[in-house]
Image 1 (cartoon, helix red, strand yellow):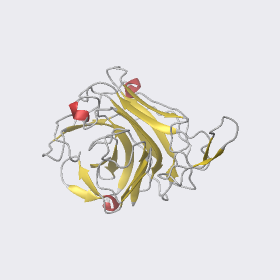
Image 2 (image 1 turned 45 degrees about the vertical axis):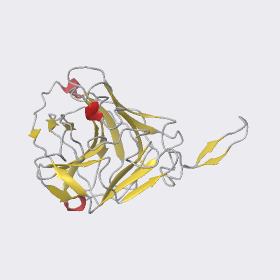
Image 3 (image 1 turned 120 degrees about the vertical axis):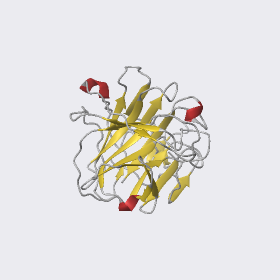
Length: 277
């Protein structure tokens, strides 16, 4: 997406989903679930994207109806957006991508620590003062792409029941200080990114290192939030503000690997929490 000079394919997984009116919710609590797109037996359609210096070449992978997504993520929600379901897209069965919720790797909110092995005391990372109070296992979303970026595979997560108008997107990322710091999770122009499908069939991207409306970092985590005025980049060119889009579907996609195209860190992995709509 933005600020990336290397050409590569951005693999984007889409299937039909319901659109529901909702409220801004913070999501973190979930259980493990994955789904591999090749299990559908469908053949994805590819849509090449021309990009300038600021835009990488990408490919849209459109899956047929019936993509199997095992129910996974419980969410803190009163209505609307209420689930985040991990999936992998790996049609050639390379076994080099992973998306899963795991306990103990999320941003700690109201957690407890022990310095003597007997007594405990409260601990909250300053980057995530708010989170899902029902998450008793401190779960985080692990996204991994091993090997080179051109491998035709991606890790991802589908956001369930998103509203038709979105005024904020975000997540907490396990990364020091800021999204530009090379230490910690990969945070590039194209991954992890939000893929936003509109009701009129267009695709827009907001990448991890896109300009944010909020960025709060501490010793181990950074909270990233993109507001309604954030610029989203179109799959077919052009831009639009996040708040102006008529939203049909939103996914998080991680498809940058350990080669130069996965720079600047070439880490090929990220841990997210508190996914926000």
